Each structure stands twice: as structure tokens, then as C-alpha cells.
Image (cartoon, rainbow over all chains, first blue to last red):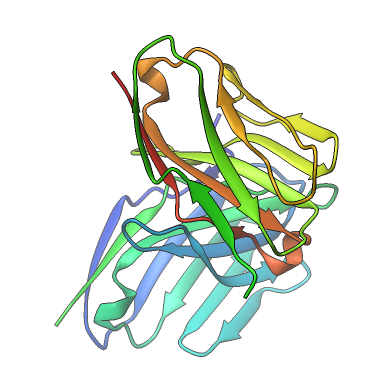
Length: 112
Length: 112
């Protein structure tokens, strides 16, 4: 039972355009959400997070949107750069735990 | 600088052998986690620990065990390696979920 789902295994975007990565979750107890970025042969690195009391959080070119009623979050990257090419994982956590449940990942390719 | 290191980076073992993967962090984090990454499944939680002498099972704990005798280390043991345990294993540590996890670089394990 996959509690966190990323339905798009891959995404290809032209440099300079917007990349939108999507994530859906099923557990209504989740109240904290994170995005991680992973390059080949490296561990995932933290990118951006959002608490359920917010619906948007920005950090430079990265913005995460949360729609609690739809149990959906998205990561926007504007403008996309070739160095953004990586696998992106969304993750979620419940209020009573520090463990994270990860999605299956989306491979983003940004081409010139 | 504080870091989290995993060893070995690569390991090939035979079916039925006991294998231990090491994870060592110098962040002084109480929380430590083991995940495995497989295509189509993303990152799945194996075991986790919130402090010395504390261990908990994750989503895919069968065939794995951990022990936490100090703050710095959380070794992962495969009691009797199986081909289904061929995967990339990541260790992570955290203060709490709001700061995200810091991941190691991973151990690629092949069971033949």
C-alpha cells in the first residue's frame, strides 16, 4: 500500500521553462512534507519542505504547493537548469513521528 | 565537518551469508534510519532508531536487523542474504523531521 505516490516516473523539460513535479498521498495524518533531490551514486539531499498549516513555501527557484483537500503537493522549479536533472522524491511524515515515507521518485531531465 | 558515512560502498555476497552494512554519523543525531532504493519502489524504510538501545521496524524489515549501542552507529545486518535483497541501501540521520534527513552515499549490495 503506497501511501505516497509519484505517478510520473519521468519528466523532460527544456532549459529555462518551468518543471512541475507532482505527488499524491493517502494518509490524512501526514502533516509535514518534503522534497529530496538525488544524483546518481549519491545520497538524496533535502530540497524544500512544507507544513500542513501552509499551502505554499518558496526557496529561490523552488516552490512547493500543498493542497490538503486533494492530498496533493507539487514542486515547481522556475527556471529549470541542466543541473536540476536528477531524481526527485517527495516524502511525508505524521505529527507523531520523525520517520519519513517516500514516494517512488520522478526522474527530471532538463535539456538545452 | 560533521558527516554520515556508509561502508562498504559496494558489496557482493552469496545467498545465505550474513552481511553487515555500516553506518556512522558524527552529527550527534539521535534519529537514524535505513532505507533501500529499488526501481519502481522508491525509498522504503527498513528499520529506524530514535536513540541508544531503541530500534523499530519499518515497512520492509523482514530479513533485516539493527542494533544501536551508541549514538554514532546503526549497523544493518542481513541475517541470511537473499537475491531479493539486492538493492542500494541508504542510511540517514536527523535531529527531527523539520530539519530533514542527512543521507549517506549509499551501499550497493548484490546477492548472487
